Image 1 (cartoon, rainbow, N blue to C red):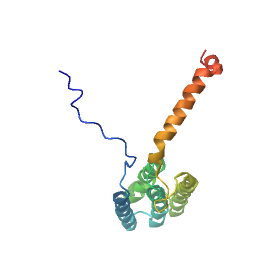
Image 2 (image 1 turned 30 degrees about the vertical axis):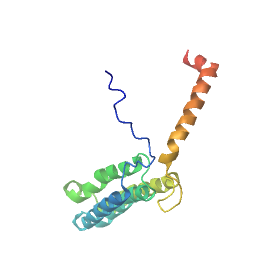
Image 3 (image 1 turned 135 degrees about the vertical axis):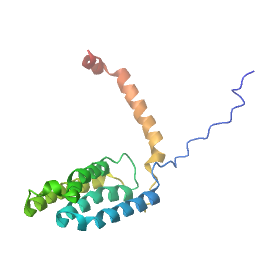
Image 4 (image 1 turned 90 degrees about the horizontal axis):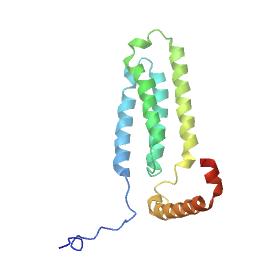
Length: 166
């Protein structure tokens, strides 16, 4: 006897899947920002620490405010920048050989780089939550099918591909 017919039907794709809950991500990001900014009095140079920390927080805030679609590459890079450039300012014992001007100049360089990267990535993040536009997750399957069919047709009829492979 077959159990194939007795299995319940699988639910169809509703298009409402989102990997990140925006409200929880926003609240978590605000809590992290508050903790990072509250640690500034304990840094070797608080001005240098704030230059890095504020610019580190820009990329995750832009990503969450745009709807948190896609892979958060720039927010992850900014978190790594915090670990590599701002955390040593909190520990401080290895930075005693540097002058205050050097620390501020280095922190300003890192902060301006992160701010420029965030501003450059901002147009590519998409529209914000408040707009009446359907989320990309609902449009993705039709676009994926269209791209898939075009690429299969192009690969099947393209003799240049065979030349390239050989």
